[in-house]
Length: 158
Image 1 (tube, rainbow, N blue to C red):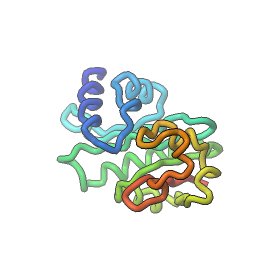
Image 2: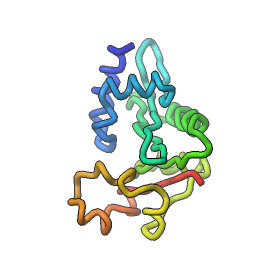
Image 3: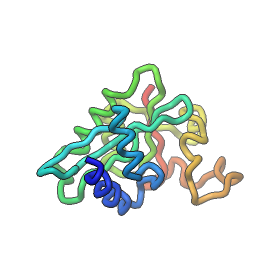
Image 4: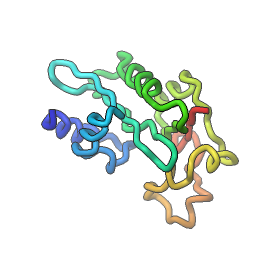
C-alpha cells in the first residue's frame, strides 16, 4: 500500500491548489491509519482521495483529489460525502478552496461560506491561513485573496 501512496503523493503534488505539507506519502498513510481519510481505487490504483486534517480545535476537509482521467464521474462527490460523515459532529469542520466543484460540494452539503467579517470567527486564523506563503504575517489580516472569486473561499459546517 505504501508504494501506492508514493504514486498518489506524486500525482497530487502536480495539483497547484493542494498544500504540499499534507501530500507526503507518510502523512497520507497516517491519515488512512487514523481513519481520517477516504480513497477510491480502481485496477489497483488510487483514483480519488480526501482527508481530514486536525487544526486547532477544528478539522480541515482537505487534500481532495481525483485523477484527471476519472473526473466528472462522481468520485469527488463520493469522497466529500464520506469525509463529511466521518468528521465528528461536535468539532468545527472547514475547507478553503477556489475550485468550483469543491465550492459546489460545500454548498450542497450545507456548509456556510465565510465573508471577510466573520472569517476569523469561523476558524482560527492560523488554522486557515497559517501555511499561506503569498503574504507576510503582517499582511495576512488584510489579505486580498480572502473571500475573492477564484481565490481563498472558506466554508464551514455550523
